[in-house]
Length: 268
Length: 250
Image 1 (cartoon, rainbow over the protein chains, first blue to last red):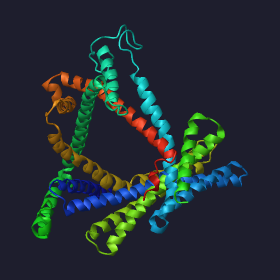
Image 2 (image 1 turned 120 degrees about the horizontal axis):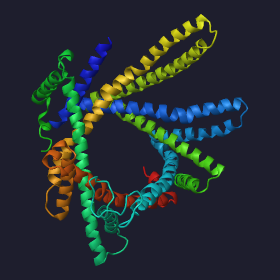
Image 3 (image 1 turned 60 degrees about the vertical axis):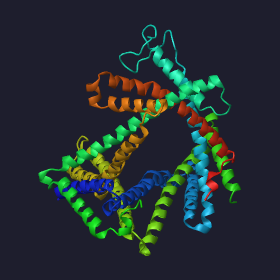
């Protein structure tokens, strides 16, 4: 029985993977089934996670613990009952489902926006501003802590090692890109020239990021192809080949007999 | 009530979140931590609201037999199935936890000096119950749906982007001017340097790729991060002082 469930799982994985890949041909019923199944499962999973990881421990369990403390005569339990306010706000959030009362949902939204604006304000200032400025304050020549002797001029065998050129690239890059994005004052000739260097760095950054994204997606694709080929065993009934055949047959039937003439050329 | 109360709530909560970092006093920490928890719970309710809204819209389509209602029915069925399976998973986890706890106590009692033979038998019986409960918690409809439906669909949908990113690359990577050429060269170095064939073509490619990512790329990313942080701080202050009111829309 357990083996049968595992086998069913492998077939389901392969069929759903192929169903999503069928979108490469065009939007079709097989893809739509996979798409709606994904949204449904993801919504159910998110609902479960919201309850189990947040609402239950942070609200229900917290208040039950508080009530138990009150029963035991501990006054700290009363303080824990403040959390009831979160429940009230949560219920007010659901008022959005009733159009005539939807304005009440502004109150909980205002709390969320205020809380995260305040938290992010400090968090961003610390992590993305102060820490980044501090990491850019590096020596451009001479001795450096952690480097044996003087800072070398050229990059070393290990690309991450410090050198004068590397540090110059970092410092000049940061200053020039910041200058390029400085719009508060009309840029004169020297500032514009620095900004030109800045845009070179921006282009290199975007190119490197784009290259990384392409490789990450291709690596995911290779992973999916491995799943399909690894599962294609005789003991499992060749799910990849059989599944591909079934999906292609379904697409052919749909294209020839079921697709309405108006939908054949969606691009006009 | 409709505009002033939300503005007051945002300002009050936002100020307390900032005060928390600058004044380490018990009452400020207490209030701000409680407000933070309220925000977290309210956000979880926002997820519930999203799911209920999805339910409402799709149920309407199914009831009125509108176009594609069959797909919406599948969406609703799979959503309810996953919620039910999640509830079952939770129950199994709780039972597994309780059995494990009881088993530990029984083993402690059985390993005590002069423990009766019955205690050892109880411990052995509880161990088999514990294994059965753990198996039920590890292998059930929830984990099956997660590993055989949710994960393959999510990974494949993201991997589909490889084709679209590659086709976009053909349009973006054209050496029309110096800026586009820099973008093209950086992307090619990163892509070639990270795959084994890059090292076979020229041994310097992996080194160049690493260097490009560590130094010039860091410089660009760092400056962009700093700019974004300044923007975030300005926007945060505008929201807290009620100049920007995104929550009043809709």
